Image 1 (cartoon, rainbow, N blue to C red):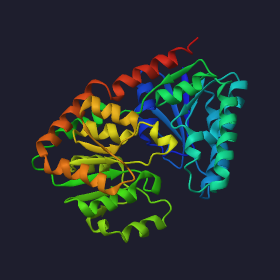
Image 2 (spheres, rainbow, N blue to C red; image 1 turned 90 degrees about the vertical axis):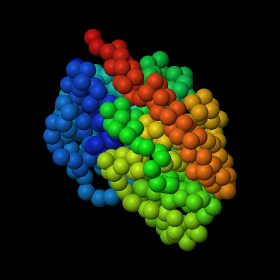
Image 3 (cartoon, rainbow, N blue to C red; image 1 turned 135 degrees about the vertical axis):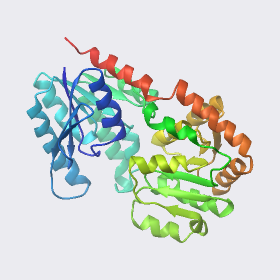
Image 4 (spheres, one colour; image 1 turned 90 degrees about the horizontal axis):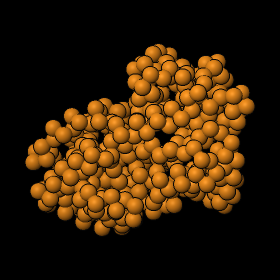
Length: 367
C-alpha cells in the first residue's frame, strides 16, 4: 500500500510524524511518502520525503498557501492512503475522499478546546471560532475513512461520529531514550529543565517565579510567544537562575534531559491541557528523572499510580517551589521516583507498543 503523510505546520523531522509514524510504517513494509514544507528531498529511513516551498510568513500564509501547496504535491504521488496532521488540511480531506482515496485525520490535539487558549485570537471571538471549527471538523471527520488521536478523551469525541477511530499515544521512542539511563543522580547538578513552547498558558512565568525560592538552576529551551513575553520574564527575581538555551534540536533536547535532575511540566488548567497527555511527562520518565507536574486529575492519577513525581498547583509559584525543593533536598526519594518512572516507560508508555496499533489500524483498510 502506498501511503502519503501530509503536513503544512510541522517540520519534516517532527518526532511524531516522521520519527514515529512514518518510520514505523516503512518498517512494516508500507511505501511511505511525507510531504512537508521547506525541506531537503531525500529517502531517509525508508521514507520518501518531498518538499513544498512557499514564500511568506505568518499563520494565515501557512494555512492558505502552504496547505494548498501540500495538497497539490501530495496528489502527484497518487497514494492509496492519505494521512494528514494539521487542521488546515481538513478542507482537502473530502476532495481526496471523492477521488477514491483512503483518508485519515491525525488529531494531535483537541483543537476546539485549544482555540479557546489562543492568545492571537481576540478574546471575544474565541468561543464562536471554537464552535464553528468544531462543527466543521465534525462534518469532515464523519465522512472520511478514519481518525487517529493521542488521548482516550479525544478519541471518544470522534467516535460519536466516526466508527474508525484509533488511540495512538505520543509516547517516547525506546531506542532514542535508553541511553539516558546512564544518569547517576548522585552526580547530576541541581538542575531543573523545561523544553517546549514558552508562552503564558504553559506556566512558564510561575515556574520562573518559583525559582526565586529554589536552590537550583532552571534550563529553559524553546521559542517565546509572544516575543515580548521573554522581556517580561527577564524582570522577575527568579530569572537570574535561568539558563535560556533558545530553540533546540532533538539531540540538544536529549542532552538537556541527560544533564538535569528534575523535570517540570506545570501547564495552566485550561480545558485542552487538563485532558492532554504531554509528551514531556513521558520523556522525563524515559530519562529516569522525577518531575513536578500540574495537579490535574488525569495527570495525578498516572503520577500517583507510578510514584514517579509530584504535583502542584500550576498557578501557585510557592507550591511549585516547595515540590521542586523537596526533590532537591531528598535525593534518595527523587532517585526512586526516577527509577519508577523509567520502569513505567519500559512497561507501558513507549512507542514500541503504539506503533503496532498504528500498523493494525492501517491494515483495516487493505483490500
